[in-house]
Image 1 (tube, rainbow, N blue to C red):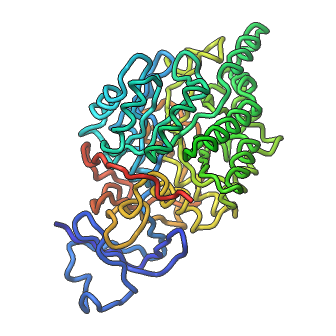
Image 2 (image 1 turned 90 degrees about the horizontal axis):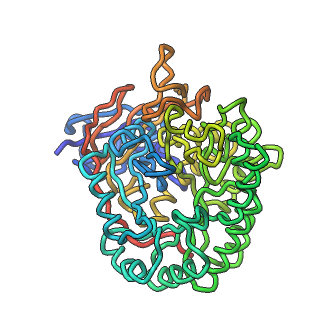
Image 3 (image 1 turned 45 degrees about the vertical axis):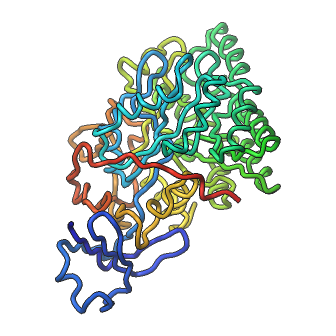
Length: 478
């Protein structure tokens, strides 16, 4: 068992910051000590196996990204990151736990879908991982299977109000699933867009010759996100189910969530980095087919309408509780290109799992959020929301030794997978949705359960370091 002492850093939590030393014994944090404390001996540094000097740096809990899609089949192809490549990239960016989505496809049994995802991930992950369960075919058998999810360490399931013919659940199915949610305590996660209405708009736009990526955003109008969000909230209100709305992009949807929360309802929302920084005009509207890089659902929203500013505000006020990535990467060549001449055939997804902590830290630098809120929305709240808190998302005795040493005086340039300018990313993609972004901070060292896996711009981890983590019920309910 290796003992590690992190000295001279500023430990930042969701509630404050303090100069403290952190002692890890094997995989577990065993002490958080005042600098110079003799509680464990007059020269603790001399008695441990490894000392990490964090002078001038922040010591924060490892990031928890509660929304990723590794190896997800979608639109005639599959997400380009495997569990091996995607979790390694996550580690580079300071994320030490992901919660991915196991998929029950139409006509498939729930536990067969779950078993397939275990097979994909087992022995391949660089960091710890858990699963949500997508229910893509809600029927009597599925409802019965949901009774056994918690025993498998899965405390949340996802439904889709979008994608008719693929994952879509109608209102009757949503109602029955939410009744099961209320009964079992499982968190209902909802992709809230009005899928049938979107399909009408897509058909009309294509018929008019409007085929460029820009029209992906036009077809998935904010009204259809707001309407579906409201409908999901009302069904959750009726049944008493806790509701978590994924990838919120429209300010009007935020307002629906905020109103429900003001009435004491267990309704929560996440947003993603792309909705905080990117826009319909500048990205989806890029010349030619370039906008395909930024096709995702829900779509990027108009900057002129103020969605991005409102989302930053919602993070400050806790109207939106956390930031995940919805990491679902596709290469331009051979994947995004499937939608040349027809935006509806562009695989939906952006790769961000490596950049979430950095992009949100830039929000601290720019005065959008506080340092403590940065930790809260990237680590602590995701852990609490999905039944991981105590082991993940916090630096305290008994927690896993998942720690990031972050240098506020460092710098990170985001660029292509490999080039000669030191601008790199490690995701399995032939482009970057974030190319050209400059971050006033840097992930220096990452520990996963006490093992240093990133240090001094070197990857020291290995395939299979990560373990499946069983989750309990949400620790965030009001």
